[in-house]
Length: 237
Ligand SMILES: Nc1ncnc2c1ncn2[C@@H]1O[C@H](COP(=O)(O)OP(=O)(O)OP(=O)(O)O)[C@@H](O)[C@H]1O
Image (tube, helix red, strand yellow):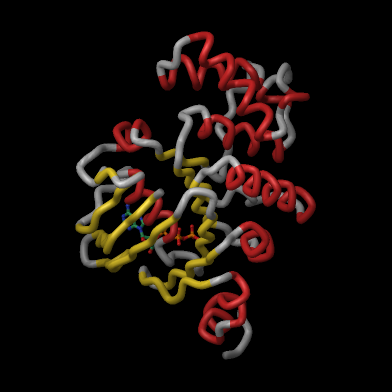
């Protein structure tokens, strides 16, 4: 389980995040939406300690990780997948994952092999295991980006606009994948601009605007909220 309390961050005089708290239980997806510049990516940066928070705390499975750097947080069970996939063009899917396991996280060879099989399965990449990273279509590069994040065997995974650039049908495949992650017991946080994908995958959605939490509720309640409609969906309140 991930728990963050009162995370705040300013850059110079610009307050980017103010007192944002969240809890995500295993098997649950918390969707995060908000207009450009709302502070969504900064929230992920603070959770992973890519950017150091000015104040606030983060804990994973009851353990306070506030004092840990990014590597320490990854070791504690957190991982992040990025919008723009960073695949090795001349390594196969399988080689990339083996490398991520063994070299990246120091997993022993046999265990790494077993884990690669599990990660291929959950991300739907088994049939593409021998394809080179550079030859994959965008959807499969995104799956591979997710698979690399799963290589760390996280309990909590942060998905940063992983549906960006996908067609509606492909975005629906990412929704299916997120459901699989939930079934596997991961706590999932998903920043996404594609509202219907976020609604389909999330148990709760948090809306950020100007660095503050505007609302956190079920997807149905959030999209029906007049403030959200005015701020984000462009519909008059
Ligand atoms: N390192 C930084 N230095 C100064 N300002 C920053 C820095 N990082 C982010 N900001 C500012 O913080 C605000 C929030 O940015 P952030 O990227 O977190 O928003 P976002 O909600 O993820 O937006 P988007 O949907 O466009 O990705 C913006 O005004 C941005 O310019």
